[in-house]
Image (spheres, one colour):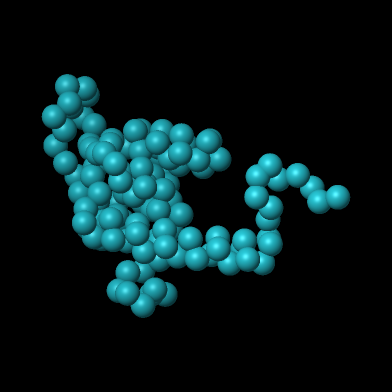
Length: 118
């Protein structure tokens, strides 16, 4: 399915990976740690899911493999988001924003502190 703008919808794993790479390049374990941190531990990306998604994102040219200037383990592969990856992330985030707005309009959930109605 296409969103009408030439960009196919992202899987949730791909969305979180692109989001983790939006502010800096990271290696695989760094991506997984960032996803877990940004979601307060609600989302944990295991190695199989992570590297399958990374492979697809590389094929789609949404991320690129980059040489690191860091002095840590030279076997680590670092990734950065590309311009087309930023566009895909933006399209997906806007779609999620519309869904969230619709849920709020339909009062599907309460704003914090999530107390039950009396």
